Length: 270
Image 1 (cartoon, helix red, strand yellow):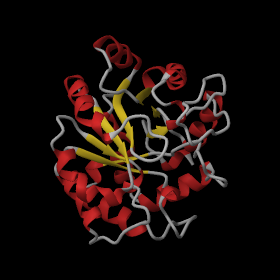
Image 2 (cartoon, one colour):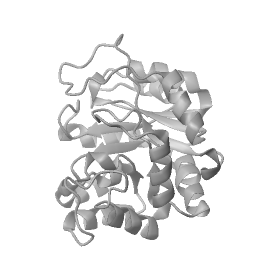
Image 3 (cartoon, one colour):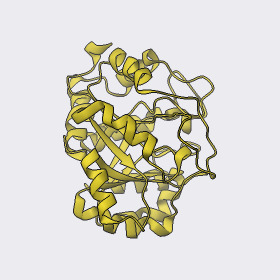
Image 4 (tube, one colour):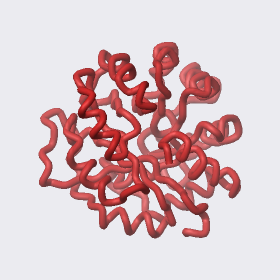
């Protein structure tokens, strides 16, 4: 499988879980432990060299578990953590030194920070060169696109937009995603199709037209991620499943280099 991926390939979205760290009272997901050693096995099987550790909703505003895991990977790792409008410069500096390059907003049940924090957080992180990472039901993008374009920092949209359920290419919400990406100030992750697909694995056929259109139109604004360890999934994909889907979505070696190496290097400051 490693022959599929170019050297320097980056998994831009994964989480770690450790029962020694308390869950947020608002958490709706309590996945089993998923350790650094567990991920290293998946990383080696896929032939990935870089990774981006993303704060899951399970831990709310307490980034400790993810930061501890991130430290094990050194310069190969970056982070996207959760902060609110009350974050102080010293904390932002500490996070930046640890490899953090973005602030996460999860606008679905269990998220720790609401829409009212979006502009204040964006103002805090823009001078640092960080981005906002946003997960929402992509069907909301029609009413959010102007607000997102007005932010002073770049925006990353999770999971092929996470349109629940998937939409047609001409749907206003998908057109809103394209407008974001065409602006040159936003990115979209090709990841976690199971979060929105109604047709299911192995091909997630209802997402295929969206992915194919994005790859053809804006490959320079796309990222790839495993979403390991696939929280909330009763039958999570294996590394073999992930590799097969990646090959389907990005069939050309030049495309894979752009999406897995060049684009993350730009966004995450490698």
